[in-house]
Length: 335
Image 1 (cartoon, rainbow, N blue to C red):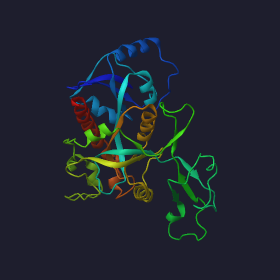
Image 2: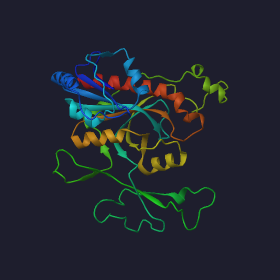
Image 3: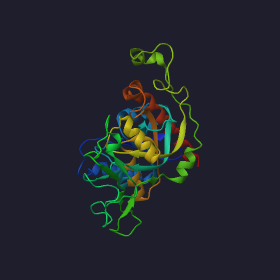
Image 4: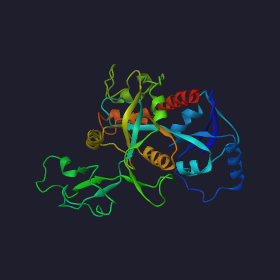
């Protein structure tokens, strides 16, 4: 779902696109293409890429939001389609994320300087180790430079002296073909930096965000709330906007304490999600400035069972992410 929107006093246009998981239309209808052409004459725009409806709804309800017709609807829209169809000078991706960083709390909004896709693996056969070359490594397809996860390090109770049959998975960079590069000459990208100007603006954000009112969440009473809330059960009373070093994405919903600990200690990541790296890679490949803003809705498997109730904290996190996005766009407009 997408449309051209205006936000209050903003001096730039904003194009909002939702990443719906429906069937992709094979062609753009002529009427829709005419509407797109009309809107492009009013551009350029800042593109907002939004993962789901529960992350989009707080924006639709924000007092600064208003529609600019016509309302343009897409199925299966992607960041690439956004950049192909519209005159976009920058992309803001926002939403919720799991939190792998022990120094942050649920409700905080994290803005990483780098993003990586951490689910492209070379799964090594049993019996091979770090000293053994990976298949196709000599051809430049795979590498041991980034490192690996050794499953036997996480075997419960007793470690098998012969290791674990799952052995090791080696993290791999993505192949990219930048528009400014030599045609058909691949490059590799693991840590993709956000736009430095956007990131510097994000460092100045001071946003009043939504905290937790325990009396509005009956769930907390069911898990034994008795008048006070500890750090693993509640939100910090004053959620923060924090610029952090790294975030990571994978096609995996992370709710596992051991892997959460591993990926934080290995890569120093804070937010973990399922979409941001794809936005980062497309924008990097296309040479378009971008930034990702993610509010933390759960601890990705860390802490107590209560602290991982994403269904409970998602509305608060989604609202906080929108508040930060609105302030970011205002600041970007003033620059």
